[in-house]
Image 1: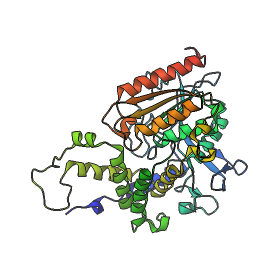
Image 2 (image 1 turned 60 degrees about the horizontal axis):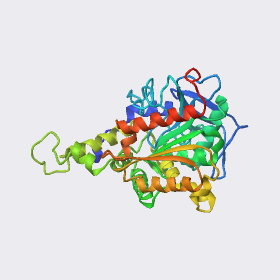
Image 3 (image 1 turned 90 degrees about the vertical axis):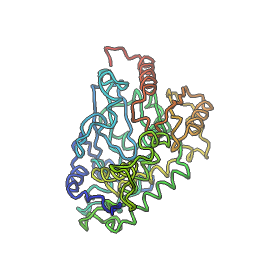
Image 4 (image 1 turned 90 degrees about the horizontal axis):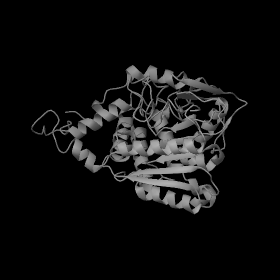
Length: 400
């Protein structure tokens, strides 16, 4: 009989994960005690570091930079091999020569968010004050905190304004925060499959995942590194639950239906009789090899707290009042995690603030994850929007 406890321990990857948390296989920007990151929780985080990747070349005018903001379980490795998994970059379908985010034209930047576990300071990093892993001593972070850190990175790189900020899901939240907090630094914005605030249902799903992690006896109150353990079973269950929300019923049915896994008859046990069960277990076991459990807690909480209108008396349009940024908002018909109705609410608020905005609802049965998959209409819309933004900014082919 096999159940979720059969998920193998990622002990072979523990040392590699710990190394990447402090000494990433990426470019690295370090900020000392004299350059603290001011967090929403009231704490000044210093020193800290940001791990990032770049693709393409920055032009002489520094006007062709595009910031890609990654989603919850992703990282800065957009278009290169991942140092832990050896797999291709998570958005290679969008980033590269001749792709919508064309590296022959644009300078692409993506940083691991603060609170992440792939080189930017987070709960998996070493606390310089103690010499031990931060764990739950790390302060709670928010989406605005992530964006402040990115702004500090761009200052370090000498980039005053961005041609575009883009990203999906949690990345889309960062895009919206960029436009609300630094409107003069963002020429165009392409938020995808996201919302201006997390719904009660989404908060509930995140709480389910966090409780799965914290219920794992190997979590040890967040001190699992000190105990030489890792709550891989709880984190795997959290990933399995989360992954279901990224898909649609139609996509699951098309891919798996009720087909059996390597058998014709049920085993009358709790083994993975169905293909969909085996798929989810694989998603869980592969996830724990590359992700830190405490980072999962911190980043899901950051998404839960996000609410663009909160600092504007709850009036969303006020968050974008007078903004000059060009927007292209994209949603997908089968995305029930961030449904089109939430994108329409954003578009209405942008219209009320007299912003320049276009909107596309793309018909697909591939669910929330559609922005990561081969959806040609999304590619075409993204390419056209970026080319339009580049032309409006006066970038000639020679300048890109």
